[in-house]
Image 1 (cartoon, rainbow, N blue to C red):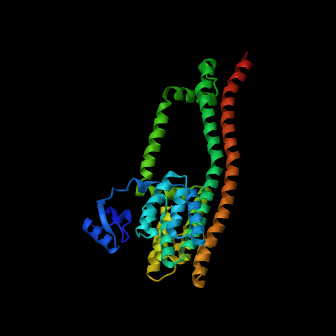
Image 2 (cartoon, one colour):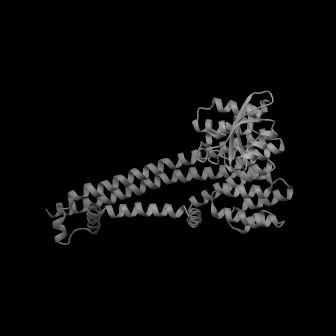
Image 3 (cartoon, rainbow, N blue to C red):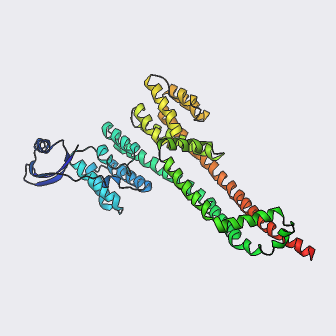
Length: 399
């Protein structure tokens, strides 16, 4: 539905400006008349497609939700609270978003509908919880829960990135050093070992090393282009629906790491579903939102099947367990929670426990990964050194 920007005067003669959604200019004029506003100028508003793509970091959004909840709990009206947060924020994107949200709420648009225009700042879970909170009269509680959830997810993301940063840097530096040795250092020994090669006395390991060095110097651009091209086409394929499904399947099959990915995805699903149910969102809608929050197509398919079963009056635990994608402890606890009607609380507790255990597994995995990478890199360097020293020792013995 198109939007119209208007300038009008109220019953006291004061000028009022804003925007409203209407199917035509005539409907916009009728809507203004229904609000007891006398239009001065009504024009079709420019599209906000570019603005709706504005992105704000999760940490900033967690702070925003928490501050908004605190303001509302202190008795500050919603519109004034939005204005306060808009004026005090230093984030340009957030200021632009809140300015638009303020104008829309002032014109009578519900808060949930106003923030839904910015999906890269307010995710679907936040939008639906705000809608449920506004309709049910518990907006402060809903905002506090969104703030807590967002803070937890950002903290988990930060710890995961921090844990994997050192192994990634170590792998890049180590690979670069080994490549430098083979490409630039090994060729200096080629002429020295030529006599041994002519006599057939050159060790096999040294011969392989010299061949690898010659190949990389002459044709190294081929594997480089193949790697870049393969990465590019893999990225394009993973952007397709079939590619995303394949990528998520492969991610879950990685030894050790696959279990970590699975547990984090299940924890996200449980936390979002439990939070939505606690705030009055219907279970089918909550399952639809939490399915996307899992960020894994394999798990999403299992949750979609569970949604169909619930529509038919069946339980949630049965189809989730039949998919073989969820840990058995999760299925058992969901089954008990459904019987005792405590599903919302149990799901959040499950998420807390899964995240704690999986974070410990991740820390242990990274700690073990570091020495393994060091041993592998040291072994490669040792092979290069041995391949160069053995012929030198042979030549020294011959002399």
